Amino acid sequence: MLIVKKFGGSSVANAEKVLNVAKRIGKSYDEGNDVVVVLSAQGDTTDELIAKAQEINSKPSRREMDMLLSTGEQQSVALMAIALEKLGYPSISLNAYQVGMNTTSTYSKARLKNIQTDRVQAELERKNIVIITGFQGINRFDDITTLGRGGSDTTAVALAAVLKADRCEIYTDVEGIYTADPRIVKDAKKLSEITYDEMLELASLGARVLHNRSVELAKKYHVELVVRSSLNYEEGTVVREVCNMEKMLISGVAADKDVARISVIGVHDEPGKAFNLFGLLAKHKINIDIILQSVGRDGTKDITFTVAKDMLEETLDLLEENRERLTVKDIVHDENVAKVSVVGAGMVSNPGVAAKMFEALYDAHINIQMISTSEIKISVLIDEDKAENAINAIHDKFQLGNIKLKR
Ligand code: ADP
Ligand code: ASP
Ligand code: MG
Image (cartoon, rainbow, N blue to C red; front, top):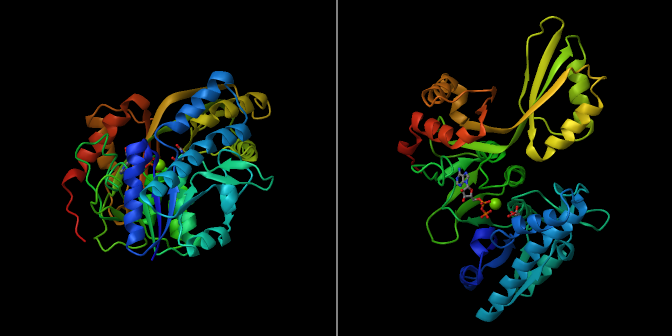
């Protein structure tokens, strides 16, 4: 069998953990498998590197940040090869350049375009365990790019897809995918399986256990994923197209604090204004999430929308520059907001989920600023400091801690 195994930063945080993971990899190799390993930077390395850059320059270029951040993963793969060497296993570490992992050119949020397989396959034929840097890629200028925070999951799934691996295993610091972040909701329940669509929503809505692009790729290339703990041998959660389990009404609750709210006030109430505003933002590749427009009054209206926090400054600058053209009287923003969402395929055929969610928030005295819904999710925007409280209240209201899971 060909297995791709990805280990997250906390799973390789220090020498002891690297050696333990190396033993686990060696065991799989001893069982006769071809093993490709994808690693993240150790522990908080990526955050530390960002802090180091900030000490020197508060607005570093994205190109140089990618150059810097990619070093974290390069350390991990070399250390893992050194650990396997000590245990007597043949292995080789490779970075994105050596493999040929080609991405789009957008620094800090590049997307994988294609991956060369010759080198990896040649190393597997030599019976090497191949250890590859997660998170990084190479663009058409031969520069190093990164795939966005948490992007190593995506590297692993993409490799599993191009190598036609039999399995893709994502090892992390929790035992699988839960009904909510188990660090925030004490009675969160581990799911035995979840569909790509539900996991894609959860990942996009803040459940960082999987990078959302990794789930997108897994769905597109039919890569069955297993998320499990690197610390024990408990069964994890399988992410697949269809679940045997009865469709659960709600499969999870997630919170995303990486959001900012912007309102443009006093826009002329006439056709084309929303187009002008969002057309401008689209031209500058600024992603918009929830949108709310007020009913026109006295010839003007307000438009409120959310963006990722790291796009806030750029968006505000752009709006300020185009204030007159957009006929905007005032621009206000709030960074202290969070988006809390419930996700579940069963929602499609069960009315009343929204009402129940709003009731949970009302009971917890939490005010809702904005609402957005789709077939399988409902999201609300609330004050950031109420996020944990809200997740717990909603999780309780739907009694997710008591759900019965069957295979
Ligand atoms: P890694 O370094 O292994 O990639 P991450 O920190 O990126 O690990 O992701 C794992 C973390 O995701 C967990 O420690 C947990 O706090 C968080 N998390 C958020 N939502 C969920 C969820 N629904 N199920 C499991 N973990 C979750
Ligand atoms: N090291 C990167 C990060 O911290 C990538 C990853 O962990 O997946 O975001
Ligand atoms: Mg991660």
